[in-house]
Image: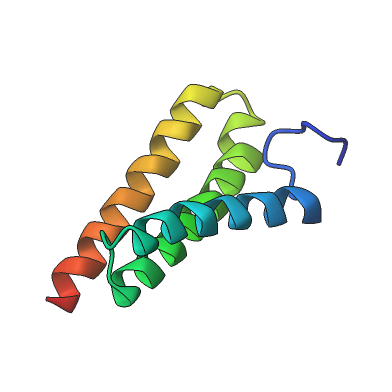
Length: 91
């Protein structure tokens, strides 16, 4: 699909998204705020949110059922709830 298409997945975009998640997690881990286990969980959840954002963009946003702001909100909420559920399960 052309660059900028809602829900389009490209190798460069995916690599940048995964890299951004890694940088955020690395800062938290290096500052001592996150243990390695929590850092890995947060990284995985961040990548899951990235993928969920693309799925929503390719389906609901492309059809005009959701705007970009709602896609961003939904993917952030999805990642937060996933992290909460995984952390509750781990404890």
